[in-house]
Amino acid sequence: MDTQTTLAPLLQTALIPTFSLMGVGLGAALQFISGRALESKKQIEQQKYQSYIDYFKGISTIAQNRTSKDGNALIVDAKVRICIYGSQGVISHLRKIEESGGNTSSPETRAEILKLINAMRKDIGKTSSELDEASLQIVLFGNRPFNA
Image 1 (cartoon, rainbow, N blue to C red):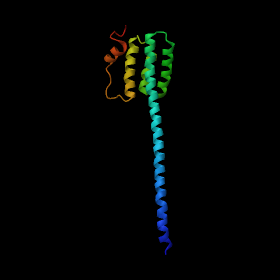
Image 2 (image 1 turned 30 degrees about the horizontal axis):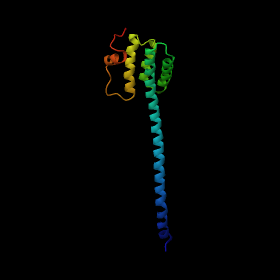
Image 3 (image 1 turned 90 degrees about the vertical axis):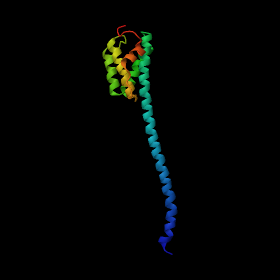
Image 4 (image 1 turned 45 degrees about the vertical axis):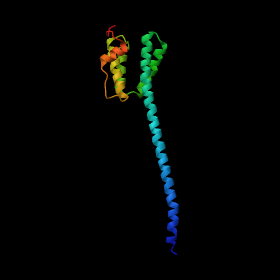
């Protein structure tokens, strides 16, 4: 009997399970790597969303109680996280709010806050519809003029 003929079934018997196990191992490794990348991206997105929410929680806390240490701390913390996770457009509008003094009773600051909200909506994927600033003005600041 030829050695090549006797080795062929033996190699076939050994190689098929080996390649199958290698395929399973490679598939598991790729799934692990892609799962970690997806989870990391999800955590970063969550941090971004939470920083946007916390910023406006701080603004509303200060609007209700002019001298709120909690509101100021929440805003400072949120601004730092926005600088880390936020888009360039969001950070630009935040900068303009700071440059205008950050006083929500000033017309310039209110106008910039409305633009900031639309920039945040765009940043989180709400690109299909930009909210009109008149509606946002009424919802956020009530039905009173800018200089109230």
